Image (cartoon, rainbow, N blue to C red):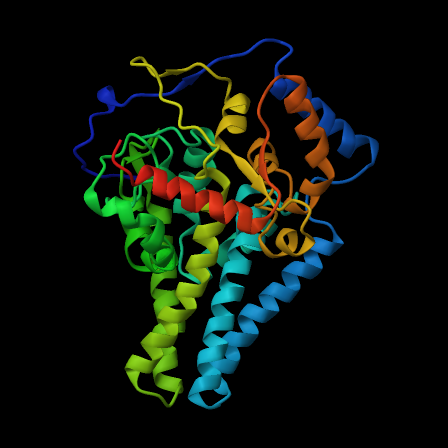
Amino acid sequence: MQKVEMKESVDESKFQRVVFDRGSGKSFQKEVNRKVNDYFRKNNIPTTANTHMVIKSAIIIAGWAGTYGLILFSGWEPWILLSLALLHGFFMAMLGLNVGHDAIHGSYSKIPWVNKMLGLSFNLVGANDYVWSISHNIVHHSYTNIPDHDEDLNQPSFLRIEPTQKLRKIHRFQHVYAYFLYGLATIMWVFVKDYKKFFQRKLGGHYRKTFPRKEIFRLFFYKILYYFLFLALPMVLIDLPWYSILGGFFLAHFVGGFIMAVIFMLAHIVEETSYPLPTVDGKVNLTWADLQMYTTCNFAVDNKLVNNLFGGLNFQIEHHLFPKVCHIHYPAIHNMVRETAREHGLPYLEHPTFFGAVSSHTRALRKFGKVA
């Protein structure tokens, strides 16, 4: 595959790489891997999608495509179209959280082209699957909650979600305005973040020398396709003023962006999670698996509605330890992960309810917004 060199003022020789502790032969990671692998092997259960997962995916895809089709061709009253736009935003989030996320991790199917095809759903909600695969799969999962290395911690300056970020006066109100900003998350993907991140050499703790020409083409091809399908085509086919079309587009993304951003925030930016700092030579005095236990938090694991709606990401600990396991299996391996962590003297962070996690996240925002 051809690659292209990009000029950028980042000195690779000054790029600090993180080194994790190797751990002992009786490490938590070794033990929990053995237990989970034995569970799937002894019960003859594939780690990929099952019938329930396929049915759920079909319903979500039908809801996403159906609301889009009705908006374009139904000719219904504006208030009905607005309601459909809000519903479309909901299905947009469900598509990303339940289908695209697993597919890009390679956990949906054992067949690579199936994962690749379903991963394209990220592009059809305005994001870029290649950028996500690096910033999320590689960077976030490798350097969870490590400042300057976990790309998810790199937020706009008016949002402070980790202790090393410069404190500003405006941050004292962030626990109020942050939730509005979360609604802008996917809008930023569509128009700003993907372009910016694609051509950055340094993405958190990951450094790239080259950029595949194929992915540059795909970036612009799918962005143009998305703008055509969700902006240009509605303006041609829907008998409403252009500003009404833009309003519906924005509201759909506000709903989708809000859901997706909040779900990811509840997993890592809560009162109980830690933000480990590497030493000057880049060492973190934790194994990679142990790091996940200090920086990741579950929520509402007994709530079946939450489990089904949010792609199992309320089982965030299980997801980080086993990203190649489809989220539909997380409830089954949850107890063995928790028990193993406690056997090894590691924390197992969790909130019993969804709103309990929201409250903890709000308190964390307030804490990070206060003058020390």
